[in-house]
Image (tube, rainbow, N blue to C red; front, side, top):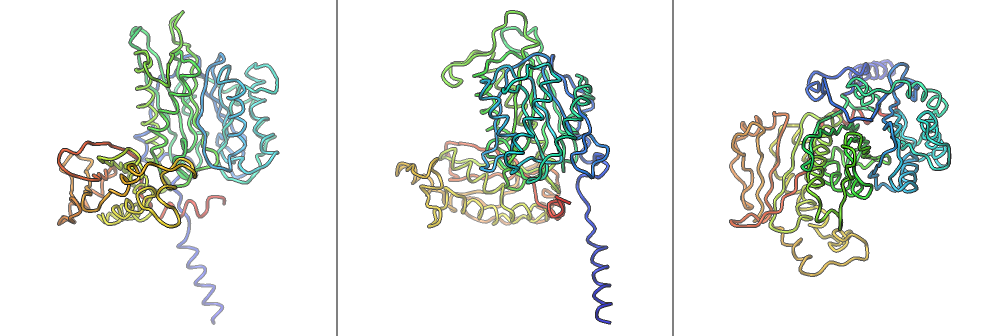
Length: 495
C-alpha cells in the first residue's frame, strides 16, 4: 500500500501545483493592466515601426516576436547598456555600431524576443550581426562591415538564436512597417516576454525658439523581471523628430536614464541584455533649424535644450514606471522617497536598499506594516554600514583604490536611528501614517495601515537626520512588491 499512497500524494501535489502565470498564454491583457495601454497615439515624423512572426521559441507558433523601428532617413542615436560583465552579443554589436559611426548615420533597431542571445560565444556575435545586416539590406543601407541598424534580443540566456528563422522573417518584418498607432502597438507587443501588457507612450512638445512647430516623442519598453539599474535595465526604444546633435543626444540620454530607468528595481537582478536607445531624425524641424547643441557637459545650454531635456526626463520616467507596474507577479507600485541633510549618495543608497529588500517587498505584499524591515534595510545598506567584508571606503568609492576624505566618510557614519523617521504616504492624498519618528516607534493604527497597504499605489517616506531646519536632498526610487507569483514565473521560466 505504501507505493500506492506515495503515488496518490504525488498526483494530488501535481494538481495543486499547476502553474498560473502573470502573462496569459493567449497574450490577452489583464483587466487591471488595460488602463496603462493607450488606444491612440501620435508618432514622430519619419519613423516607422513593424513586427513579424519568426517562431524564435518553438512553442510560439503564431505571435509576433520580431520588431523593427527605423527612420526613413539616417539619424543620430545614442544608447546606454548594461554594466553586467557577461554582456549579450546584441549589446556588443550595438556598442560597436554606435562607436564606429560616432552615433551618426543610424537607421534604427531590430529586436527579437524569445531568446537573449547571451553567453553564446562567437556564434552569437555572428548571429547578431546577421540580424543587423539583413535589416540594413532591406532598408537600403550600403553593405559593409559597419552596420547602421542596432540589435536587441530578450529571452532565455545561454541559447543560440534560430538565426535562419529570423533572417527569413526579416523581409516580412520590413514589409509590415508603418507609422500608425497599430504599427507601433504591434511592435511594442512583439518585444514582450513575461510582460502582461505592451508598454508604449507618445506625446507632443514644442521648443521656445519656434513654438509654432510641434515635435513628437514616442517610446516603447519591455521588462517585468530581472530588473535593476546599472545603466538602464531591460529594453527601451525612444524616438523623436526633433533635431539633436550627436554629443547632446548622448549626454541627454545618460541624464534621463539616471533619473528614470536607473531609478527602478523589481528583483535586484541586472540583466545581460539591458539596452535603451534614443533616436532623433529632425524630420519635424523647420528648414535651417540647427540641431540642439551643448557646451561643457550640458552647462550654459540654450533654452531649447533645457526644454527638450525636461521633456525627455519626464517621458522616460513615465516609461520606466510602466515596467515597475508590470513587475512579475507584482500587486503594488511602490515609491520610495528618501530625504537627508547629507549627500545625495547617502539618500540613494538608502532608497536602493529599501527597494531591493526581499523582506520589505514581501511585507508589502502581505499588507504588513513592518517598518522594522525598512529601518533594517537602511542600516545594512553598503556605504552606510561598514563591515569587515565590505569596508565603508570600498562600499562608497567609485573604484577599489579610491579613498574618500575623512569628513565625507564621517557623513556616512552619521546616519543614526535616533534621527530617522519612516512613514507610509497613502495614494488617496490622506494624511501620512507615521511609523517611526526620530527613532521613536509610533502607536500604529493597524487597521488604517492595512487599508493603505491594500491600495495599488503606496509611498514609503524616509527622513534621515530628521530635525527642524535641516536642508533637504531627496532621492525618489520606484519598485514593487514580491508575491507567490514571482516565484512561480521564474521557477518555470525556461519551460
